[in-house]
Length: 98
Image (cartoon, one colour):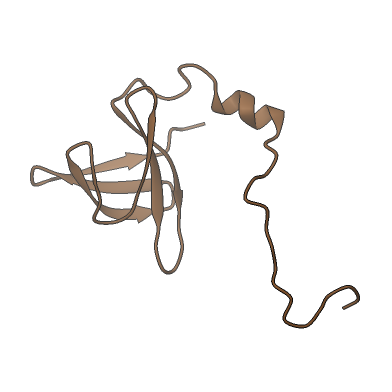
């Protein structure tokens, strides 16, 4: 292809511009349930899946299977759902309904 050199390394920006509508939606007060632990999203990859949680009102944490969060262990991550084990009981957290 014109303009490409053989063996040229691809470079991606580490930052992207976030659309204003996304920023506004992401910062809407009380948009998530008033819970100690809220699932924000899941990322599914063949080699490792991740989930993003909001803990309390401000802390956000990324976890993988086997990680501990809020006194529970992450046992499974699926599309929009995370399974936790807490004190011998299973707990299912899902993304909030839109």
